[in-house]
Amino acid sequence: MSNILEWIGYIGSIIIFISLLMNSIIKLRLINLLGSLMFCFYGFAIGSLPTGIMNLGISFINLYYLFIIYNKKEYMRILPITKEDDFLNAFLRFHIKDINNFFNVEIDNLKKAEIKFLILRDMNPAGVFICEKVEEQVYNIKVDYVIPRYRDFKSGMYLFQSQVDYFKASNIKKLISKAFNKKHAAYLKKIGFKKTNSNSIFDYYKEIWFSL
Image (cartoon, rainbow, N blue to C red; front, side, top):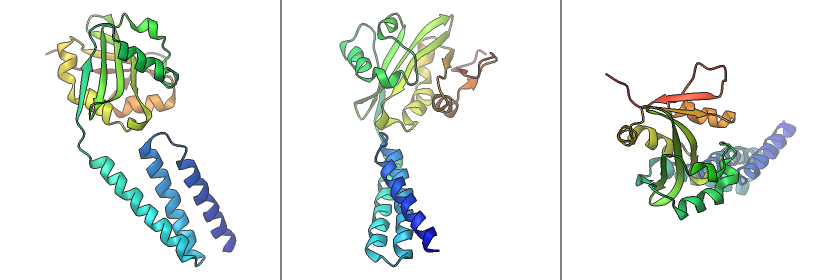
């Protein structure tokens, strides 16, 4: 039994350590919550009240901030870019390494894209969306990127649920996207994209509106 408790303590410590490596505050809180709960159990099980009480407190703190994050009412909007924009280019260049974990892009090749806008959360630049026309009413997503601290699906849900009228006004009926890894594929499915009929398992599409 003592060996099992030791392993619970070790695993809890490792999980807490891993949580501190997360870029996303939500992942940090969730993983840290798991680790602190395990370490809380370990502390009480071995009779170490300070360890148990401290980690119980940490667990409640994590729960409190997760509740705040998931229930916070954020001001969100998109900021269309209609011409060459220095801030957009600076944003892309600053995040290009992380962007290329999901999209294979070169900034200079994005200049011809017809649709470009920043995604703002509480007026902070949280992400960028860029797509270009491939045929009438069909656009290919070149970049749909959100910085790590805002990577909680809220931006994607806002974009593809609340901004349908923007896409309609831009005469976009269908969006297509290629998933470059499993994480990106999971994101696309989460926000309502479906696999195409192509042979590639990484090709996805989303109907923005249907003709009557």
